[in-house]
Amino acid sequence: MSNSVDRFFNPPDRDPGNDRRSMSRVVIEQFVEVSFDKEIFMQASAIDLSLGGLRVKTGDKLEPGARVFVMFRIPDEASKNLMISAECVVIHCVATDSDWTVGLRFHEISSNDRNQIKHMLDRNV
Image (tube, one colour):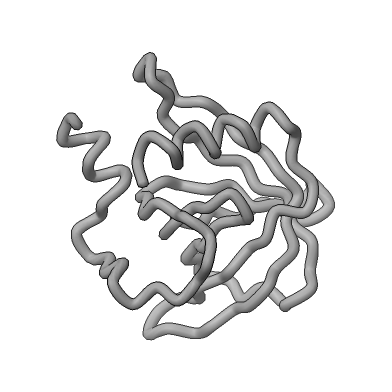
């Protein structure tokens, strides 16, 4: 795995050893665009990704139960970055020192995007 791809899946400040969730996931370092009603946009940084959703850091608090639209890129085998988009539900939002850690569950995602995530997880877990 190249350094840039390895850094994408294994950022240096992430410890996957204390993960209690049941779905397979990969640690990622990727910018995520989050919008509400496709009008208000904010930037977030992805922490990890699974077939069920993703965890992000953001400067803004998101209310649990809120629906948001996300767009982010994942690498494929041809070294391209595939755009993934989905409607998500905010599961939790936890304050940290300077930002918020937000758990997002995929609510509506195309079968093609879900398959692309599954394929990436199968290659990297």
